[in-house]
Image 1 (cartoon, helix red, strand yellow):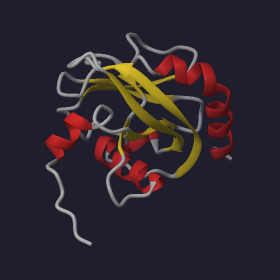
Image 2 (image 1 turned 90 degrees about the horizontal axis):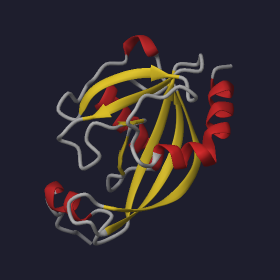
Image 3 (image 1 turned 90 degrees about the vertical axis):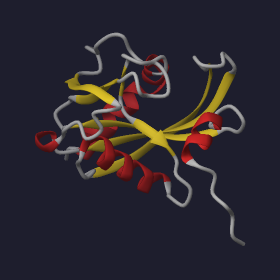
Image 4 (image 1 turned 180 degrees about the vertical axis):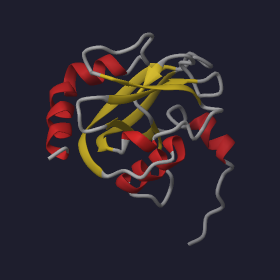
Length: 165
């Protein structure tokens, strides 16, 4: 059965509002306890100027792992060396545009990357990148970072250590 695809701009407006959105969120690390965060530009969906670990909506036809690989290549121009699924969590939060609660299923991953070849590959979406310890993060943070770390920080750190072996 063939389906006509809706334009990406139309889908983007409805993800998380007209239907539950699915996103892959990834904490990239260098194998030495440093995690990559990016500062969101004014062109992102929301929370402009905040720091987040990276991620993107699940594209039709992609597995979760393939989506993570695609997003990391798009955002940072690098190939993921090791990828591990951490958990999923529900995200309920108001949108800045409509102030209507959105609903996302966030799939959380820990990913080992080569720190030496990371670059901003989407300068229209990312203002800045930096490497940080999870106990010394920049501000302001994306609204979902502290809830993620409150629940999964130890698992992220343990997974990163295991990936580094």
